Length: 231
Length: 231
Image 1 (cartoon, each protein chain N blue to C red):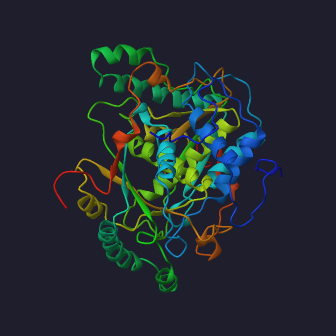
Image 2 (image 1 turned 90 degrees about the horizontal axis):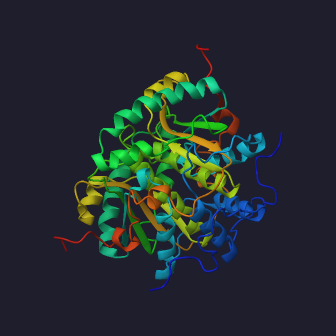
């Protein structure tokens, strides 16, 4: 079996100290990560061992009570992709109606997914535990949140491997579950499209198009508590 | 103002190509990331500009429709930490009752949070948008999921900075909101404890203690669909 790990890692030493060079590498990967859509994917196949490296990064994510409640369906079958794409077509029309006239015109021009163009799709599910999970009694959503941490690891690892990833959320989760024959107890957390790209933009497409402005970090940070009444 | 960015970054070039060295750095950071509790935090203060770097990494996360729906309350006030810790004490006793007798004995010995020991706590909230968000109509949870992506960025950046982070989920979110005077529309996604550490373990504590086994990656991956009936 081919190891899923990147070659050159330093095994499981204790108290590993990272350097400024490592911090720069991480920040650059985060900074250059983009959401990729179908007008930007290349059809080049992704080697199996590269897909394995992305899945391995998911397995390194934190999870509540070490529950590792994630499951992945790796899809390369065009028939299945087409069935999923049908759900996108229904839902994107429904969603368009929620925008103002001005935004709706822009919305209709946007390419919002790459289901058919990306060589690999990965549906990511949350599988609830049958037993009580340490840390999940009070905030039950932490199970799904663990799956999202795994997805963010995958997104960063894909970008480090110079591979694009797009998260499609304009899908009916129940329809996707039906197409993939998923157990009824499972919850679809994300549907990801993965492939090599024509280009990685310098900024998120919705920022470039002025759909939304980037927030000032200081506008999102409070010290000790939200202001207002109280001590 | 001090830039929150790590020194040495290469600005906003297009199509940045990452190298094997970058991939190794990322995988190592993911591999050595741990959930840190109070028996492992040092009381050393974290410089402000280091906290800023962690918050900057959050701002680089993906978000549905570029909504950036995250807010952070940075807590260093002992009075507030004590009020939050009270909620932990109530909830941990309640949660303990859900485990078998054998696991309960282990549960009661585990140190499950570092609210008072960590010099900095950060409560992370989801702030719902007032307008329709592109991509959030069909899967409304993607707003909260965006906040979780930001948290995973923070966790990885903290680890790259050789700083520990622990996620406390044994808290009553409504109680935390009350203590922090949070707007009623906001949702508490996570309560994080951040500080320098005595050590980073070679494996997750719950794995070392055999509370749960690590899953084989292959046991979590399916090709094209879940098996069973269907084409």
